[in-house]
Image (cartoon, rainbow over all chains, first blue to last red; front, side, top):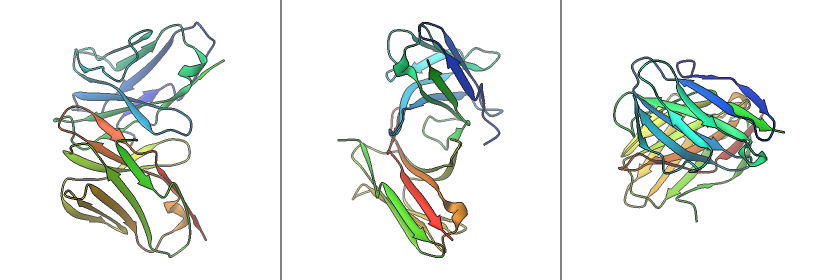
Length: 114
Length: 108
């Protein structure tokens, strides 16, 4: 789905560095979701945002992780002081209106922590 | 136990075979999605359904709300259908629950 743009596609960080993952939703979409996919595991919900608001962050670790979706610009998932266990594929999805409407996914960012 | 269970985990089929992938869930549901993930990671939403049956080309998805079960069928399978198929359940809140996926390989 070219409509949801994630960058970078691949991100390599050393332990202790910061990782910033960006997601531009499809045009007109105001709902953004972040998911994490660990090797050999299914997608896990992290956080749900609407413009300028975090609606549900129950799936996001309380420490080191933060997310925002500003009025202008992409949604950002930020991981501070990365550890090896943060290595995963991070997917962003967006929807137009209600939270459980059809989702459009980005191609993901593969984070590797050395 | 996961909220969403898929079977089988892996499936190999000959080109032309009829394929069925099953999904059972335990959470309250607003809608169920079938997703396709190709090597390289991109995820495509195939279907969203809350009742009955939907068809798109060679793909058919059904859902039985009472039994909390959905199936994805692929008729006349083709090697380009090889991918991981993921069942995702959206509840009345904000969350989606995902199955771990079914890895399908279609051999020419």
